[in-house]
Amino acid sequence: MRVVVVNVNTTASVTEAIAASARSVAAPGTEIVGLTPRFGAESVEGNLESYLAAVGVADAVARYAASGERFDAVIQAGYGEHGREGLQEMLDVPVVDITEAAATTAMYLGHRYSVVTTLDRTVPLIEDRLLLAGLDRRCASVRASGLAVLELEQDPDRAVAAIVEQARVAVETDHAEVICLGCGGMAGLDAKVRAETGVPVVDGVQAAVTVAESLVRLGLTTSTSRTYAAPRTKKITGFPLEMS
Image 1 (cartoon, helix red, strand yellow):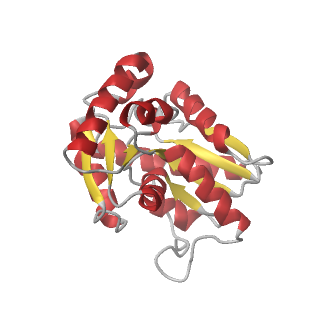
Image 2 (tube, rainbow, N blue to C red):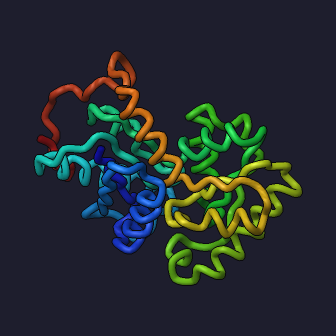
């Protein structure tokens, strides 16, 4: 089985960290392929960058498919980002978004969960994605650590301290029973946060890998009967997306 994990930003080192986290939980026989968009922002922390990332991710996947490489599932590794629906229209394999994978996994582990993310400006985006996915009712809170995406990589000790601080507030004040790491760049920090808070901590990338593997093994993929039917054939003018 081959699972493609697509970073939403253009920072290659973040892609490498995400792919490493995915490989750490992949079943024997599952190959993880990390993709970095060829255009977009170095980090995604707002609506404009998120919409740009949606196109960049679709382009990266389309180019990979056009190269003739076979793959069984795609993971969009951006928390609260746009674009999952477009990928589902474009592909005939399962598409898993880390936001939804983390939240659904958390709901198996406790009554309510909280998300700890990066900057405060990303909180409404995550809240909106959870609402759209129907996952908001059991979300106790979405809290910001105050760190930018690239700071997670530049100063991991400070990142862990900031995430732990907000996770503790979520548990003690918001009554969250599970914490979701609300950024693909937080991949691999779950064990440290769990040790400090004493509650289950869900890494969205790792959760998405196990969901994707399960869908492939069950022989299931996106329904194309209505909402995610393939795009109609039509002329697209001046659009950068690689279309076959």
